[in-house]
Length: 134
Image (cartoon, rainbow, N blue to C red; front, side, top):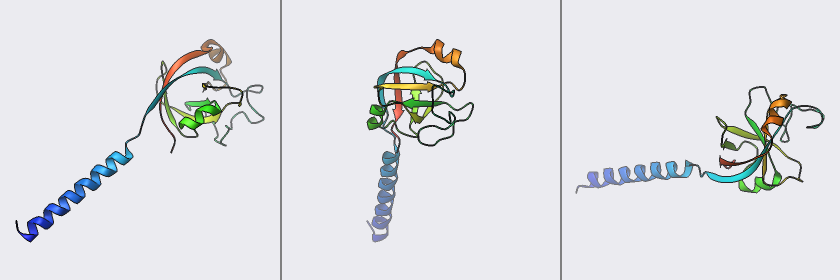
């Protein structure tokens, strides 16, 4: 091999490895777990004095797919901004709120002001799939 061929091969391999490393480094690790799932609303009695602002100071807007999580789930990466798929529900939800410290292994699906819908939801055991927040 000539020096030029060796040099070109080296650069090609270096570029290939760099691309491979960056692709692997950015690949998200997904976790699954079974949790209790309830629902909540932005109404007095279920939230604090400003029911449209969540625990990490995120403003909730109609149409957002949001969940609150029990604080014990935060150690698994379910913190502000984590993306979650919930068994039986379409789309992806974002963790934007946290629950009172008395709750364990639980998510709360935000149902805006629809109290009837939240009550009909009740309490379920569901599987969630999520990417821990970065």
